[in-house]
Image (cartoon, rainbow, N blue to C red; front, side, top):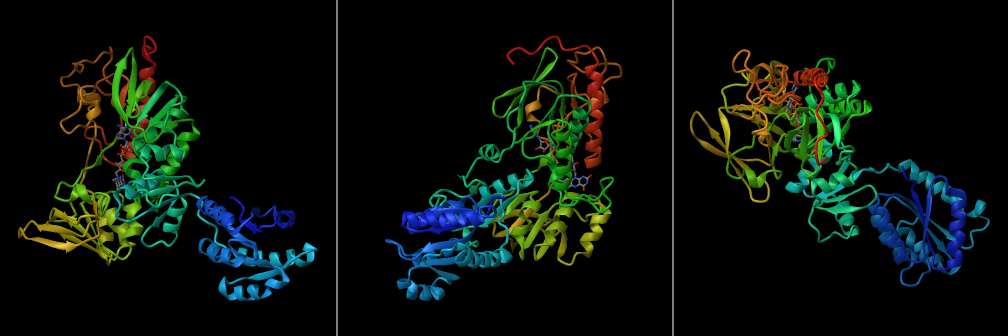
Length: 563
Ligand SMILES: Cc1cc2nc3c(=O)[nH]c(=O)nc-3n(C[C@H](O)[C@H](O)[C@H](O)COP(=O)(O)OP(=O)(O)OC[C@H]3O[C@@H](n4cnc5c(N)ncnc54)[C@H](O)[C@@H]3O)c2cc1C
């Protein structure tokens, strides 16, 4: 953590040098002593400090300076650092101004020049003020700051990305947070589009792309090598488990993730049925632990990078990544899970991120404080989200298309929902349209029994209406079912003892092996998988065992050409 700052301001070079020397001699271990030769220069220094998220503990300022007096400077400095202690350096003739300043700029002390010997005249006074400052000082948040307004879809995108990648950030709403407009101005971005992302070193990015943001916050986006023993696509529970087992068993392992580690499980507010965690744990916790574990064994994780193409050549599987680069693997595990299905009603596209959210109950929960919100869906993910949002929102209404939750939600969640005073369940109901231009204002709800449509005010709707695999990039490469789930093992053997079309190996496909030898599938993206964290983890681990069996077979003929 960087030290707090003491700022000395004086227009006379010899006095400034002397006061800086004395301050550094006594305070350098605990404070950074900065200096400025005028009030204007000092304000510029303060702007830079604010942008870099530094704190100022004390101002020691000469009263008599041309252009801007000490008191005039302090009046402006207070707006940026209201908590800093304020000391004026005065000559005898300035005593009146100093006394007046006690009220005007809440002056803490005025010191007569000269202050020698400092051990008697300077340090005791400043020690006292700095002790006082420390006692009331709240350490600043040191991570990324995001300035935006609540209904900005790009703002939601940036916050969701940071949260899901476990990067701490502070959100500053331009309409309600007093510091937000100042920071925007100091960054020279008053006219630039929001959101504004201010990094720990003070660098500001206006409406950054996710790729640019990922680079700047230090995420790993380029593979170190061209060829790996094992490449895993997707870092949900299945992919992370595969990486832990692969890397720990000596395979050079690369993981590729399009959005953020954790997959669907990473968005869960509370997982209560995962073995070994009797009181449950959040998806973010599970993800943090699994990522740490995979890295500890040496797995490399690229994020956010999407696998967009696949080609098999000379026994190597070559992936094309979203940045155009390629990476080759002796064995590949596809663990790309499923993605939320989108709501297909008028207004949905326009209001996505501006009141309509897919998943995102964790990112947006604080923003719904005191509001009436809706959750659409009847599965466990909808139930978890409703209970999590109920801790912040005034009321949560769960809109369920069917007659009850019993067919689709676990009993423990149904009981919790019954007990929650501010959660209501509306069955036979679905959303017909979303109303609002810039942000969501109301939802039109269709009652399936009566056919009536009612418009109800709403500021936020969270959608959990099932999910589908996004495997378009694998069409024609691997055998998929009609919904896009990947076929493997016995599913590929249409007739007993008849190998799948195009199958090139002597042996039959292993259990989790796809229609291409050496390419395996694990987790929710597999046809007829269980759609549970534990099953995904089990399949990830099992796939690695099968990878070893595959690698013990005939070796690839040669390195792929052009790599
Ligand atoms: C809100 C919520 C709560 C849940 N709660 C529970 C629970 O309490 N208990 C339970 O057992 N189950 C729960 N589930 C279900 C569980 O999370 C899933 O079954 C599990 O996450 C599936 O894991 P997976 O690794 O197969 O896929 P996913 O978790 O879907 O992960 C797949 C990953 O692959 C990435 N990806 C996709 N395509 C590409 C590509 N082309 N290139 C790079 N990366 C790609 C995705 O971005 C994603 O991160 C919940 C699900 C949700 C949504």
